Image (cartoon, rainbow, N blue to C red):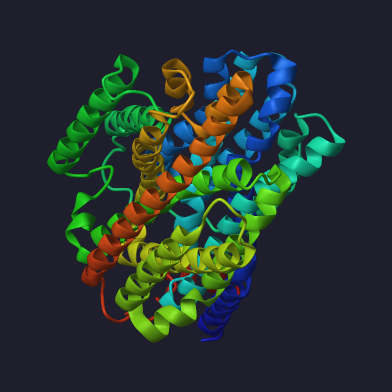
Length: 533
């Protein structure tokens, strides 16, 4: 009896320790996410310094900026499902190590090719880290109410990382050389590796059947092609361009073949039956629509603040900070809102609130209106984070625990694809509304008008070259056309957001809080405890 009592007491101590440490685990996971989120945006402000030092060509510069998110988005499913197979903590720790090594290589890069390679390796490390953080979170917080709070904190950290990246990059560039934006990752990774190995629990899926290596490579290659094609469209490339059309077609074909292969396999890499669950498939669709409607707007808003209102990059970052703070507030309040209103009303309300913010911002004109921008950005950040929080939480809770890595990878891939498609779609809408206003500017040659119709930045350059009254007229027309295009883009975005609100009606009305599973000791563990006692 005493041995059995000792075994039970030991089990209770282990359970209590795990419960006490789960919030420490959340801190470790949030630090991981913060590094990946910061690295996605920190390079943006360093591009001029990199260009001056390494002298990359136009194509090389494009790859330096884009290769990180491109590789990361392509490999999320591969590493998410690999974590389900070999252990999520193992994949996460390997991601830490690779991220640190790639950061050192990027900081010391002496030519564009080395920097491109280093950024690609950073993308591989990011793809190993991102789905692992969510899937470990799914395991550590079996109770849905606590998990909702953890996801809220996790998503708030993601919002902080995206905003801190440019500010941190700007601070480092004022005091050090451009490589410091990468070098700062190394000490953080040196701390995260031993702490993660000590504190993070290991978890796997059920391990049935072999890991589908061919399917994983098909998914990676297919996503690479689709994301590359979408990014080229977002950069203004023509749909009929060979380097845009071929990646899109080949990537889409590989993804179709991947889906067919998964349906035929007894032990699929990704269980597509999850999409038959309305809550899961609707959540994924909501994530795509939310990012599709809003990521393109973020880029356009940055152009508006700098090129139309004449703000500096630092002033632009500060103007966008209220959006980040509002997103943080929504993330921290998300668990309480989810319990009170349920996924359906929460996500619907998030979409509608974001649509109201977007429509409110159509009042922006050629003059600065700080109060309007502040209120619009606050509503935008709160509404967007409310939507994404409810969708992510519903998606992760609906997925089986053994498929947590694959589900997290699907959610992150949806986020990346939605962002890429949004930049392409809203960028096209913006260009279509902007260009006609420059077709016939009095006193401006047709060739100059054609060059100015590509973007507002080019219009300013052409106007400066023309000079005189013609230059002033072209600059004035370009600013008015850009504001008109921004209004049209905002209205299209609002329509997409309202479509998302309609889609969210398929989500569950209430938050189903299952009881936390209590793991009983296995007979072998009890026997061993008796012997030790």
